[in-house]
Length: 410
Ligand SMILES: C[S@@+](CC[C@H](N)C(=O)[O-])C[C@H]1O[C@@H](n2cnc3c(N)ncnc32)[C@H](O)[C@@H]1O
Image 1 (spheres, rainbow, N blue to C red):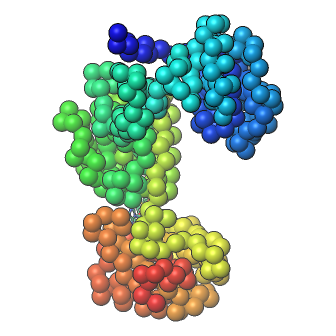
Image 2 (cartoon, rainbow, N blue to C red; image 1 turned 180 degrees about the vertical axis):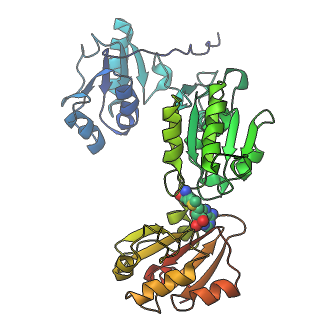
Image 3 (cartoon, helix red, strand yellow; image 1 turned 120 degrees about the vertical axis):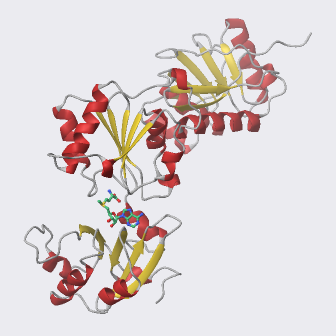
């Protein structure tokens, strides 16, 4: 008679005795999930891998340094049998059978009373995959199916629309510098669950094309602001949509809190009593130089990097940047929103001590198909920007790190 498929079940192991026999690689892989399940874990093994030993040292498991002995499974609810001794495994299996303790076995799954599925977690669910024919196990296939499911749930490509989880209120999502692959997994999932997306001009615009047609996509730059300031109008739009019970994503370029006015939005939402989740993003200040082959730090070259806004000129009384002090630093200077003012910025840095030949790179539309890099020095940068018609958005990097990469012009 063909054997029936395994019956899937979720064990609630909190504070329940779980016995693990053998402290090798199998235990190392399975223990974290058992610890996460709150199990009261007894490990019986003369030796253990350093990671397993660390779990014992941290008090996450109890470790008895000895071989398996008959009676070890007596009080167990569940057991993982994974010693390197097949005879001990067989004896432990027999004991499990006698005491009606569900056991998985690493050396002979067919002889076990339970099977470990390929598991993963995402979007508030645990995915567990088993083959239907219990003797036709194909761990690579079950792991691949598990990975596909977890990935689909994480990046939002697999969304059970009618039952989808909805994050109430507003999520301020950092979308990264522009390449749609550079948003976080959480950001992408929230985007897939949104009813309304209010997006900036910068950031991963391509992701908006993937949204289903019922999702309302609003261009933040086009929100009419009449008697309000533009930012106030955006805050109001966030509040209004959230008050209608919609899941709202405020999709921003880079990280919401790096020159992104994210906290102003979070404050306005808090004042309106609306819940707000902040999802960090990859800031252009680090990723755009990186995409152009420029590390913002490099051993022996720069031990610091400073990110500043160049949206107002150094001699503008509204500027909060101490340019004379920055000129005295040896490290890397990363300037955002500085294309229009780079001439005045370069002059100021040189006037206060930075060498005129200090390398400068401008990276326009980094991480997108239109990315381009223009190299200069502090003394030539204004002319190069004009000659190459560099336009925002661009990140400007000042310092010797500009020339350390294999693709640098120096
Ligand atoms: C208002 S700030 C927002 C920064 C954003 N929050 C971040 O963390 O990247 C906009 C500036 O970021 C820089 N920027 C953002 N994305 C960029 C990209 N893909 N390429 C070049 N510069 C970029 C430019 O300096 C641009 O003027």
